[in-house]
Length: 179
Image (tube, rainbow, N blue to C red):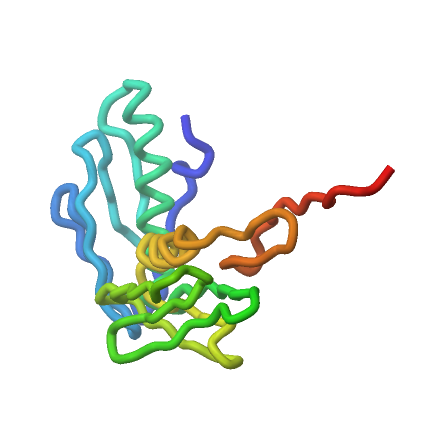
């Protein structure tokens, strides 16, 4: 049994949740999200709370209902507060610029990288192009956009040049020393 799955999800008054079989739709002040889940998970809404439970007693159903509860909780939190992640770009000449829906990244390659910002995510570039803020109501989308940008040039371990996600630990190594 999942410890996370047993917890009920509190639904604020500003949020409306619609459950249609295995599809959950959440509508709030910041927007609307909808997601379909596996048939091994059942949702029940009463008294301003959503309870998630497995429909079968299989190991897969036990794993899925904790995951489904976490996803629905993220949906409720997203339509009320939203999610954001910060990125720092460090390195000589490394920066980013936003032109419409295209994020132009200069990361030390012979060419610029054009990243098309997906619908539902908003990117703000500050501090001369070295700091980015990714915002949105979908937790998975915000994380995916952040990871995709970082993937172009992860932080290298010696000088720390590259794309760094704020709050994430990066391993740094000591350089060569003369004996």
